[in-house]
Length: 202
Image (cartoon, rainbow, N blue to C red; front, side, top):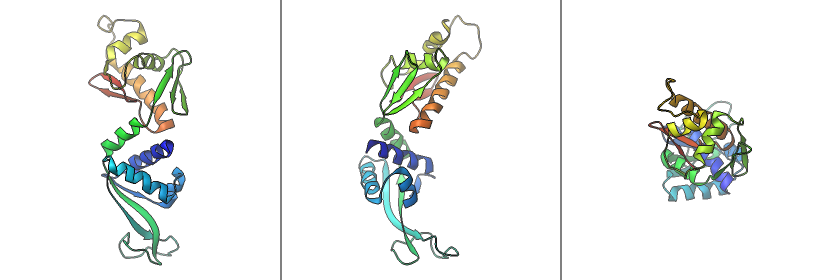
């Protein structure tokens, strides 16, 4: 169920508008959930503060030749409004935390491969991305690593002695490149960047 939970969280995150989300049956089907499974997962997210409010309403069926003039949703099911929709108000920051809690990562240095659950993300060997991961996986999750430590692994040069300008940008770009690859597979960034330090999120 963890994979389905992660897919649900990613969908909610990606479709949240000011913390409001509408979840239709067709979207549940794409995630691989039925209504009962979704209801159970949403209730679980509610208990830990990721979903602030949930209600099920009914949208107009798509057989109508023209949109009804009434409200977009009805609280009661009838011949016109008969498509059940989850209407959610979410805590986006808490959702990100829950997603990261459900993910575990490892790194194979010799193969330049990140493994997250059943997903494998290959990196170009002996590149800045590879060097970044080599350093970051030597340290615990959420430990801030100064850019200069990673820079020295990338270049073999001491950051203070190197005369090149904007040296930290090499590290930032490498982290963004890895995050892009990881997001394609699991929907969540692996690294965060703050005040020129990098943290591994899971």
